[in-house]
Length: 218
Image (cartoon, rainbow, N blue to C red; front, side):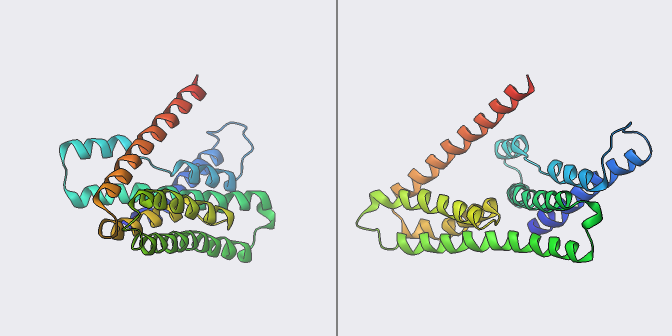
């Protein structure tokens, strides 16, 4: 269900928004702006990104149904990666120009979408397994266990970015794979260190994002 909402739902939102704006443009509601269908689809893919931070915070406070929380949280995570891939595909189409796009280019765009998405996920899965294997050998040197999580997690992001794959999906699947194994492989103190450090980094990153949004809006 999460994949359906994140992939099909995001593509549907991007296409609906782009086509609706293009229809308004065709009807004269946009004035004299000279923008084609591809530009509207590019804008739609950008606007399809959903970040329900406030909703998830409320869910945590009121302790909603666990399945509902997992679906909303999981969709919000995968939604970002799918949106980035969609944006890159439409951006490439815009660079080519409407006249240069034929059936071959559309097929290449669809294939590129799946290659970038699943390729990034595979990179993250591989790095997650590597973390799981390495943490099995660190029982006598527990002080470096959190370092493996942070360094290899960031390496999964950089590797996917270097290969032009989805870095967001890469680090997401790396974290999911780590979560499954590190509780059994790592010491309890190391797990707590990683958990609270991640919370600090996450809250700090969200604060910085909203500060930048506020500054750019002024």
